[in-house]
Length: 449
Image (tube, rainbow, N blue to C red):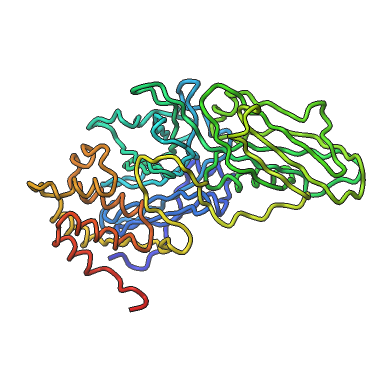
């Protein structure tokens, strides 16, 4: 056991230092000391997490690790893909890159893909800002030599890998059986000056960003650099891979009007689809027509096809007052089908602690139960099927303990308070009373008992 030692400082990493300008933003980066007990790092604003399981490093070792959002445009070197490929997740860095682990860690990335089966997904990585991006894997094209597994859920992607660095999830329309049309969720934010001049014009900026957690914070930070404020946000905009640009209309009433001849601006399709995670925006200039008007209102509409009434994102503001900070970071709701069902919850139903539900000893017992193949197949393979992570079983089969990897992924994907009870019910459905008994020994009694 390690005695009382000073926590080692973060080893300098060029990527993190340049990204944050030498100063960490509280919402953009988190750091901790990794011990043999593992670690769970979370960036709540961006719904991004890094789970390093217990036993990932040898005893008596400690490493400082960091999880960060890479937002500076100079770090968004385009991924070397075709013109119809688009970013679906933020660029995330975990490191230092020379950190060695002896079992895969799990990284949670939010994504903005809609209608999941219409996409072809690829994961790219790079160790730093100098080395070009390299493709880690395209989902559906894995081999036994693929160094990572990517699990796509409705709102998040989960990456199992042993290599630290920066990562991004990209996608394009799938063409496996027939050509499909991919669709991603965007959101618009309208921003303006912190003070409105009495007699001069006012410039408003409309940002078009991926509808991932942290989108508002991202626009807010861009505006802070120029002394601006976020004034409002739109409903969700569904932007499809159909080659049509984005039309943005602005209408003003109550003493203001747009100064340009047209109240519509059109952004080319490629600028939106290939923005590579940058904060794309356009500007409108307003001039005052009357003073002391009390019915002031600005309305913005955005769509790919302005002749259609559906698929239109709207926003409106009735003052130049700053928008209240978003109190949550949930994705927009969706009515489309999903590839898998993830039980990640929200609000008070989410486990707030960074502790693991399953200790190394409990996992070892479960692995002894479920690793050996059974004639009924009610082993780790059935567990993977019930957890909806059985798309590529070969990844787990080639690991020293398939059950261990599945449970690490479960730990990161399922942070609900009732997740352990759900796991017990799965084992009961699998007709594995031995696994049920192990889990029931660690289950906390309900607070009302």
